[in-house]
Every structure is written in structure tokens, then in C-alpha cells.
Image 1 (tube, one colour):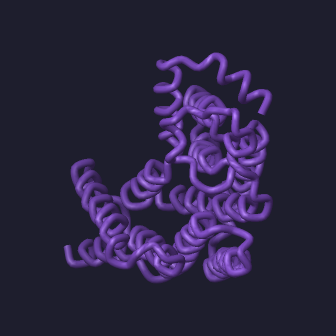
Image 2 (image 1 turned 90 degrees about the horizontal axis):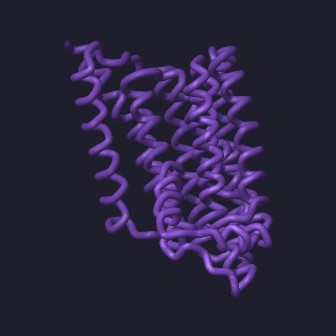
Length: 295
């Protein structure tokens, strides 16, 4: 809190806008868009690696959040004032930082993948900027950011090493799928117990349930797609763009359209995120793989 109070003395209107823009890079939508482009149109193997990194680290971070239940900085110190525009996006507990997890999973994976030093430098720079932005905006303490980075980068290193570089997954699709599904089930039960006995409130439990729904869908979708669906990227830039835009449009339609239809209960939150991710990983690839076969 001493560090956050120090930073708050140097805030400016321009700095507020800049770092609010930087923190948007770590939003869930941005990361999912990158995964979709890679998966549908460019590099399926890298997309799987990024997906496992993103969802696994997300499950771990959500589990830590509801275990330690650290309040946001403005709740720890009522005299502390965050940047007002950043507060609505700061849901859930403070420790560890979800935005740091998202950007580290994304750019950490892409940084290991690229062989170009300037690109690696930019990946590292934006990870640092997003982490710093969360402290500048007053949404997280250094502890929140550092622990989130360490946990997520460990997932990045393991997933990239075993699922991309060494291709450990070949022939082990069911095992990998079951392991991830088991992690989702464990967090789901843990969250339900804490919510039922009144330890955590609804909106804290909901964030975990969403992560479980998305992670479980990715685990199931990965196995189905890898073992039963064959597809390749389109052979022209125009076709790639069309495939991507159609898929993203339907993804957003499902994401926004299901919410008013099924509500915001915990089972509904699980179902909504499950359907969105299973569409991305399995249903849409099945549709355009069928089209490829007919043509």
C-alpha cells in the first residue's frame, strides 16, 4: 500500500488514460480473439499451447483468489483512492492479479514462440506495462502482480516446453484432457463449498465458475477436435479473414445472447462459458472442416 500511495502522487490525466488503455490489452476478449485467429486461421498447435496456458493459469489464479480472499487496495485502506475508471473492471479479489495472468499467458507464450529479439522485447515490455498499470490504477499491490506473473509464467514455460516444443501431447490427448477436466472439477467443488458455507459471496464464486466452465469446455473440445476433426488454415488471406470474422461474430453473439436468456446463476455462468469455448474449439472447426471436405 505504501508503494501504491507513492504512485498515486504522480498520477496525471494523460497517465490515467494511457494506463487504462494499456490494461485493456489483458482483457479476456482480446486474449480470446488472438487464440481464435491462431486456432482457426494460422497455427493450431500454438493455439492449443496458448489455450492450455491461459486456461490452466486462470484456474490456478482463481483458486488462489478464493483461498486467500485479499480485498482490493481501496478496501484494505479506505483512505486510498484508485483511478475511478478502472474500478468497474476490477472484479473479484485482489490477490493474485487476473490481468497480469492474462497478459503473461498471452505474450509469454508468443514471446517464447517468436525467434525475433525485437518481438520478444515488445512482449516483455507489454507484460511489464500491464503489470505496472494495475498498480498505477490502484487495482493491485506489487504482491498481487508479482505472484500472478510467477504462477502464470511457470504455466507458460511448462505448456510451451511439453505441449509445443517437445510435442508431449501426441497420443496422450485423452490423458491431457482428463487432467485438465479434473482441475476444473476440483476448483468447481471447492468454489461450491466456499459459497454454500458463506465464505465467499456470489460474484466471487461466479468468476471461478466461469473459469471452470471455460476450462472444462477447452479440455473436452481439445480431445474431440484432436481425435475426430481434421482441418487446415484457409489457403488465402481473404478466406482466413472471412473464417475469422464469421467465427468471432457468432462467438460474440453467443456470449452476449445467452446471458439474458439463461440468467446469471452459477450453473448458468458455467453453461454460458462452456458453450462459448466449445463453439470456438469444436463446433465451428467441425462446420468448416465439413465444408472443406465437400469442396
